Length: 295
Ligand code: NAD
Image (cartoon, rainbow, N blue to C red; front, side, top):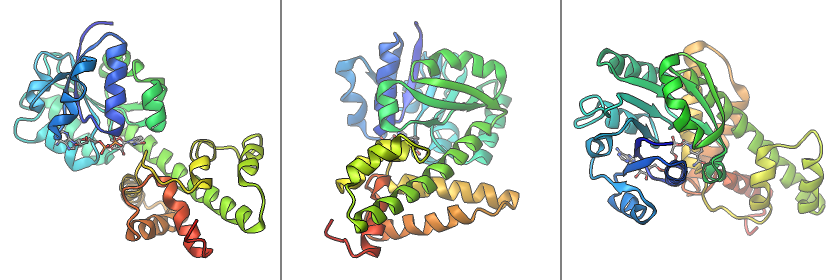
């Protein structure tokens, strides 16, 4: 594969996604607000760019992987952003998790300027980013998705065009709703199993072989059993996603009582200083409720 990708946002996910683009043969021009982030990847082949415009210069596609809606709006619509300094290939692919309404607005403004915009959020966590096995759900115009697809294929293995602009984010928010509530279920099972004195590592193995198996139990279960809170997907990002879920549900008058309940527990975790920890730190809420604070 040949071509140049401008990559903006070299954080937890973006670093490894950019690495997989290099592995697939793309030239990568990387930019991050933290200037050292792109410089740190120079030895691996990333060309550090000092600005959004510099990352876009000469690129076929620009990929953004940023925390939240305002960050993507600043990079796309802000001064010196992609609307005024588009890549030569006039295609922008945002892979962050942000609000579908904001996606549609940016899509309309970019389209009016002859620039394609695809929302292509991901699922699979840092492990999926590292392995290049992300699940990617894309919204936008079919011809833009077709152009983006080879680039997406360097970062993920399950790649679907799920509808018009914003549809990728809608599917991603449904994904996050399931992840948030499923993690709560795993926390409760571990709290109950621990109180009853069963071997939690063995319990996890057994459950993974049956109908309670889940990504959360599989990938985050060991960290929860061992009380490890190191971040992959931070509590703060989960709360951001649950806010986006709530905004979408409110706009459509869809009640989500399970989401509402688990959101209060993530808020409680953040209030105890766990916002920067991985989302498996939700188990700390259960530690407190069961007086296992030292665990
Ligand atoms: P992160 O905070 O680790 O990385 C974001 C990067 O963007 C940071 O390096 C930050 O400096 C940079 N940045 C912020 N504003 C910028 C700007 N205006 N210009 C240039 N760079 C800027 O976040 P992450 O964990 O990599 O997540 C990125 C997105 O992917 C989020 O929307 C998140 O919800 C989503 N996501 C994360 C995971 C995960 O497991 N971490 C999984 C799936 C999806």
